[in-house]
Image 1 (spheres, rainbow, N blue to C red):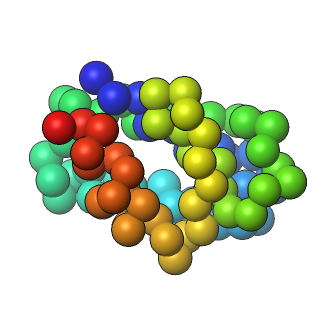
Image 2 (cartoon, rainbow, N blue to C red):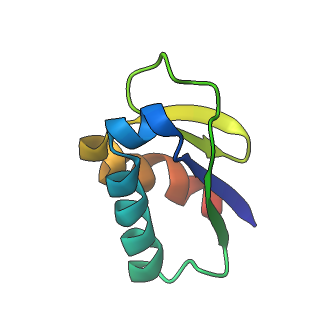
Amino acid sequence: MLELNVCIGSACHVKGSYNVIQTFQHLIEEKGLNDKIDFKATFCMRECQCKGVAVSINGVKHHVTPEEARAFFIESVLPAVQ
């Protein structure tokens, strides 16, 4: 099972973590991946200085803006699931 985490710490909240979470949840539902992705919100990932919201896929950290969330999911999350 793929582990997908989105930071909801203060800095990431301001950068749009709620919108990233909403986009990811919608895509997980749309693609029927509830049983393949362990999706969680987590507190600070210590990536506050970076642009975008901190997101980790199986422990590997990335930075995603709300505008990039859909493309990131399709390009990075989906290949890791299949």
